[in-house]
Length: 85
Image (cartoon, rainbow, N blue to C red; front, side):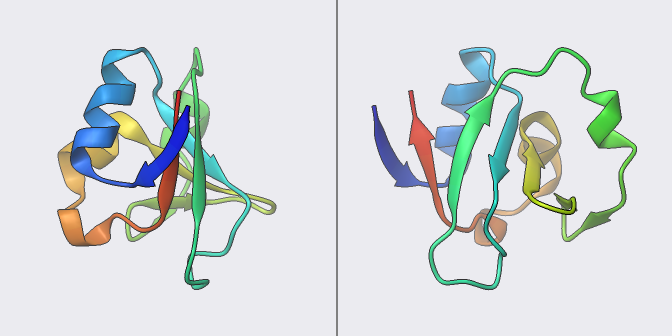
């Protein structure tokens, strides 16, 4: 287990392992954002939320929906480091 730069390859690995969501309690404007993978059964709760540049912003956390990110985001959009399990 370790942190690595958030990238398309990291998202693909996590997606293959069944993870479909990344969460962070950090504001995207800070220089170092840490993401943590999760497995969520019902992504509809998150896919219906308004998005800012592909990120779902909730009151206490920021969320990346991995399948959507792989489809819609460019490499330059990936910010921070992700915890690889």
